[in-house]
Image (tube, rainbow, N blue to C red; front, side, top):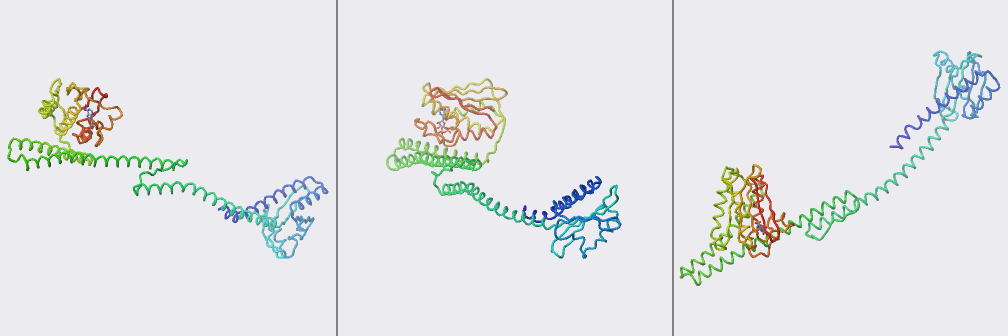
Length: 442
Ligand code: ADP
């Protein structure tokens, strides 16, 4: 762009500079004439002519040449026959123009000349001053500068290309590396990591990719855990069912008492399987956002009582007591079945992890215009760092606990989904070896 601009604008620009310098000279000559000193004037004119490489001719008002200063060494163009100097002078005179500029081609030297005419008035009378100068020196300057510009441009272009090559290499190298790592990761190599490079944008990308990678690894681990959990959870009751069915077939088929006992185990295990599959279905429904709430006003105390009664057999067997504390019937607006499920899960967990006192407290109370239900046990408790995790799918913290294998690891995440759908607050307060309180508010 610079070169194009210079090529097209340098010549006109220099021409205007030339005209301006001629005008300045005219001003100086006018001043010199007015000083009225013939010798000094002649000297001034010659100096100006020499310093500026121009030819000056003075004419009287009638067009007679008075004085001539030529420093061009090629003769004043205005004095040559080819040029209509009278016409030129006349046009200054007739048009009463203060100045006249013409560009002519000098056929003798084949160069362009500028001819400038003006009228100077002084105490001694009026004169026509005609100057001519070659533009050629200007053109040669233009030529040199234009040439220089071409070289500068080529040089700049080369340097710029080189610098951009280095820069783009510097930028693209880490991205190419990252793409390679991403491809490896996609191909199943989970060992790769996305390297930081010191460039903030690239580092941010690396950070995001590493984050995505870690999240994917977590999901992957969860998936593996899920398969292990689910297959374990399904396999245990299935083995029992198969074993007891075989026993009935081989041994107890004709013994009604034994058969009854074995059938009970089969039914119990089948129920467990059924629950597990229902839990999984429930959770997948929750996650796909397909849960429809069927909200009604119901008494939470009544619902809780009936859920506790479901555990009656187990409570008697294990010697566990559940104390239900409530002030009055507490009505809430929610999905009765689903909230019942949450209460069931909380109580079920409390029974699983009950403390040595074998006592569970279920408390329903009013709190800031809300109804809060808390299930309190004095069992093993949950460490602070695990308290958030247990609400996620397939998280079993107390894996060594004798009852841990009974659950699917889905109970709390289902409860969380249901409470979320109700916009209900919920949480756990727990201290290791002291016990836990699981609560929600409606
Ligand atoms: P699970 O079917 O394994 O009980 P949950 O989602 O109901 O699955 O619970 C997740 C985990 O939270 C449990 O495996 C257990 O480690 C922990 N947990 C839940 N309730 C209690 C509790 N009352 N006391 C101690 N740990 C609990």
